[in-house]
Image 1 (tube, rainbow, N blue to C red):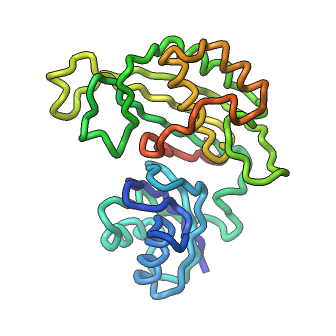
Image 2 (cartoon, rainbow, N blue to C red; image 1 turned 90 degrees about the vertical axis):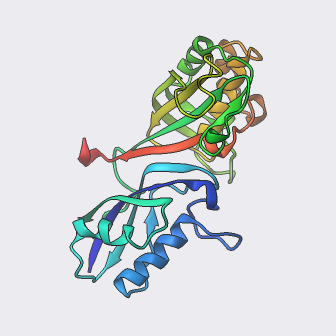
Length: 262
């Protein structure tokens, strides 16, 4: 028996998230079916991050156990021939049987949240970013974001699922980048159109934490909150103090790094 680690990229538009559930097709379900067909075994993958419906990934991680004779490094190529075009295995490799993608020391996850900021929506970006028509003050968003860096109780920035859930997390970096928009048919019509990317890295994230951070920073950018309000929201430790949960389509899990890879 061998354990194979997969680095998985996907467009989450047509999926009800990562985890198998009864009300729609999921990334995990597709991987289980295609791997079972490929190996002629009953395969059940274990994912590192259970992304929500509509959320994308460039570097999610999963493992599965198999007795297949396919070389581990060739598993990605073999599996990609069976997967739909919106799911791709970036890399496959063998790891120890005891290796678990969620229970390792020094895990760092990086997410990006993409905002299309222009007067009119761009249909080419409807599945990969959130549209905001009011001009956003990026500098204010950066100042607000700075209050969230470090180890804090992020109870204001999550949807708590149990009364015993530990809401302390560490954010290592939180950057707000402004990028010119050069894609799509609208670029020549709207020179002022821009893409704003919130990029955050940390040791773990609570349910909806990144999307609530994004929703809060959007309110800062629109002028509803001053940057200092983010500090007050953080200290309140009450979900209703923060902004709305931003839509899922703007969120991308960029990578998951493990201590042994540093």
